[in-house]
Length: 298
Image 1 (cartoon, rainbow, N blue to C red):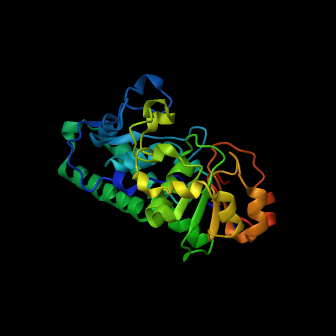
Image 2: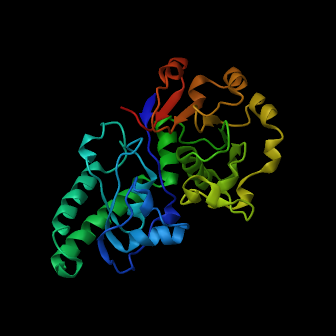
Image 3: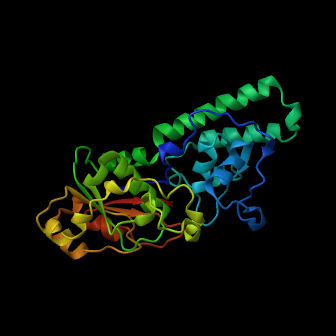
C-alpha cells in the first residue's frame, strides 16, 4: 500500500511538434545559479529550452524536479549529472535509462560546435527526443499520474472524488495531481478548499507564486469547480457522497480527517507526500490501512 510517485506535467504543455531552430548545445539556464534565472514569464522560459539541444537539470533538495518535465516538454533533452545515483524508488516512474542515454549524447555533442553537427548527429538526437517525449506523454502527464494513483489504489471505477488540502499554497505534487484528476473527472473531483491558482482567472498575481506560477497555474476553466459543494463538505462526507478521499499532502494538513475516518474505510483514503526532504512517518498511515504515495521514496 506504499507506492512511489513523481511530479507530472499537463499534456497541453507538451509540444506536439518541434518547430524552433536550436541555437545552442546547452541552455544558459543553470539550476541553482540565480543569475541565470532571468525569465519572468512562461513563454520566454519555455523558449529557452525550445532553442537548446540540451538543458541542465539536477538533484536539488529532492531528485524529482519540475524542471525535468519542463525541459522535455519543450523539445529539449535533459543533461542530468549523477542521475545514476538516484535511489531506485525515487523518480521511479521516470525514464532513467533515457536520461542516461541523453547524458551520453550530450557528452558527444559538447565537443562539437553547433554549426559542426552532422546530419547523423541531428537524426540521433531527434530519435532520442521522440522516445523521451513519447514516454512522457504515455506516463508522466497529470492525467496519467491520476490514473496511476487509482490503479495502484484499486479504484479504477470511481465516479466522485473529494480532494482535500490543508492549505492552498502552491505544492507541485498536490496541484498537478489535482489537475490530472480534474482532467479525468471534471467537477466530479471536488477540491476543498478550492486551489485558486490552477483555475483560469484574472485576479491572481502569478508572479508572486512559487516559480512565478510557471507550468502549474491558470490551467482549468472555473466551471470545473462546483462552489455549491463547498457549503456541504461535512454533510457530504457524513453521507458518503464521494467514493474516495484524497489528501493532496498529508504534511500540509488533513482537514476533516477524524470525520473522514469514521465514515470511510481506511482503504478508501489515499494520502500523498510531495516533499523534497522529509522525515515523515508514513508507516503510521500504512498501519491504519491507507494507501500512501511518496515522491522522494528511498
